[in-house]
Length: 435
Image (tube, rainbow, N blue to C red; front, side, top):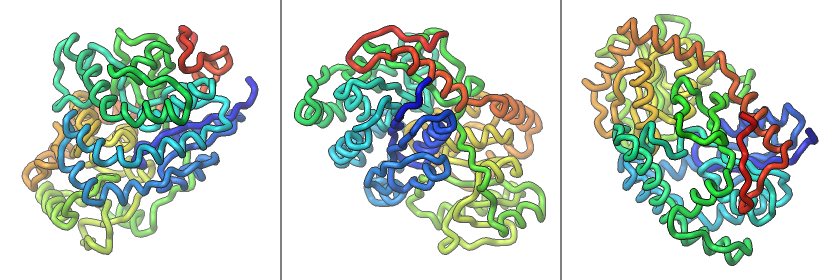
């Protein structure tokens, strides 16, 4: 097919951005011109992928470390807390994001967007270009499991599960609707969307193609999904130059496999107290550790190396277990490594991924961050490193994930879609990715 200018729009943390850089890398290697729209904090990811970058003027790590971000992190993972945090944390920046997205997509032949980059959908509708949603967590309604915002991830029955997705969509839409509809009418020349599930209803009306960048080993495809929703496998960025710092390589090589502990973009309210809890828990479990933190604030010891950053693809396979926050990207990398996971979720989708890890038998039950303590973490780590069955199950999950090529599958789907006269927003047409 002819080369195209494709814009991929997202927002949020590194974990919300790196999968889309990987997808852009795959499309670029197939001859397309790709632009990634994301927080200015992650321009380097576009550089690794070899694609163009359009920055959104927000420093996400700095925002999460600020007062409002800390209150959001401490609220927990339920729907009400997520919406409250979204309203206070994201809504004030909405107009800025909308304007930037419109500029970034001005010359696009096609637009791919995440749920955090959904402003791009409206630009596609206004410009009459095809749009496709690409997500790293299951958001399409189903009766197989509840919305990722349901606390504890417990099943509500088929009807209850499906209704939970609708409720989550409506709750988030209610928060965004005033700003989105004002933008549609005053800047894009579009009609406002209805009050009930406006954006989600538009996606369903348009048969909006939906690519899901995770493994069906981790979340199987529900039997009630439409054919235009497809699971591709994870989108991993190919970054062969990412090597460990000499200090990290030396520490890992000088003793038994350590346990990695890192919470990604999540910033604990009291980093020193959290580090002390982790240090004592690892000692009680009888393991060495690598802790992702600020070495200027947290001191290393012979049994605990503190690092500012670490390449997951190099480090995780060399660990005895990975303790992490349950972000989609970190969960993907840790499961691919084939080692047990201990998930310490903070909010939003992280409890969902923690429940999936436990359901796969690749880790113990999650330890929610507000409940983090020395005994809880020590017990979870001891189980992760001492349970041979858990290690075997984690290794099996990793083997299956490594056998997949999610980027290639997603690119094939996208090219099939683009080559077949794809529908554009607002113009209904059945599309099934040819499956």
